[in-house]
Each structure stands twice: as C-alpha cells, then as structure tokens.
Length: 234
Image (tube, rainbow, N blue to C red; front, side, top):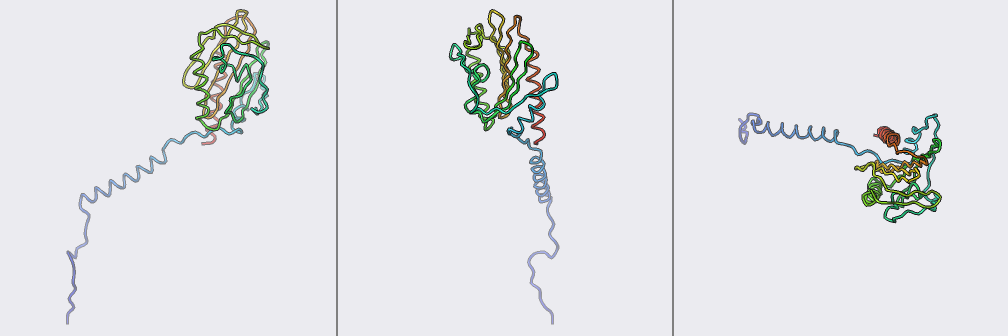
C-alpha cells in the first residue's frame, strides 16, 4: 500500500530572485548607514554649570600666576549710582560700569586685575539656556547699533563723556570704548558663549589711544578656556 503526499508547488527550495537580493542588500545598507549616521551625529555641546564656569576661571590667572576668581550671586550685587545718557545706551554699561547683573542671570564668576592705574574686571554670567544668553547678547547688540558714534556720558563716581567708538561687532562679540577729552577711557568687551555672556571692563584713566590687542587676547583666552572645559564633558 502506498501513501499519497499532497504537495503545493515545486518541491525545490525557493531562492531569492535577483531583485530580491538587491532589495535585501539595499535594506541592509540602509540600516548600517543609519546606525553610522546616528553614531556620528553632531552632539550639542553641554551647557555650562556653575562648577564648569569656576573651572574656566581657574585658568584665568594674572601675570604673577595669582587668581582671585570668585562666584557672583546676582542677588547680592550692589549697583553703582552712575547714570548713562542717553538712556538708550545704558544697556552697554549696565553689567560693567553700573554693576547691574542681567535680569535673567542665574549666577556668575568673576575676577579683577589692577594694572597700575588701570583696573580690569573680567566676569561671566550664566543663563538657564543658550536662548537666554542669546537674548541678552541681542539686547546689547541692539544698543550698540543705536549708540555707536553717538555722544554718550557717564556721570557719578566715575565720569566720562565722549563719542562711543565701536571696536568690534559680530555674531558673538562686541567691543566699544567711551573716551573722554582728558584721556579717561571706559572700554567694554562682550563675549556670548553657549549659555553664558562674559564682560571685560577696562578703566584706563590715562591719556593715549586705546589698544584693543591686550583686551582681545584676554577674550580669546577666555573662549579657549571655555572650549576646553566643554570638551571635558563631551
């Protein structure tokens, strides 16, 4: 007695057609490419924490190797009594001459150098995010655009009056100088970096032109320190 076996189709193993192999290969390459792209995707640089900002300033030392950097609590900062005219130019001197922290600043770190009669303050305020720092920088840039070349006066404990000279204006840096007829100069350099905005304020009560090179070197060093600290967290 024999048993009949009912079958459907050919009893030969099915093989993928050429089109099938091409489709499988394409899917495989797409998966591999996607994984590679995911691994190589640009990762946003981390925002600065207060401890990161302290690390940045640990490397900002004076020529004698000393460092007097300290944390800034915006709620404890005492504003100066100076006034700025015209009022539209006041933002350019708020954080520096007027000692008024930005309204949205969380905290900050700063240091001070006395170089003979010249006083140099360097400080950075930290914001909740990059957007907050960007808004502060945009506010300063707008004031810079409106006041560059105008006659500006600062009165109070410090007094200076003259044409506001624009030194630098780009996407992340501003620099400007208010020079009086007696040679007194109030120079401010601003740097926006990640979720921070930094100021270098130089008070030079001596005659002679303002040399931007030293101040720019300081800002370049600060930016380099910030990049180095960020790289440690990547």
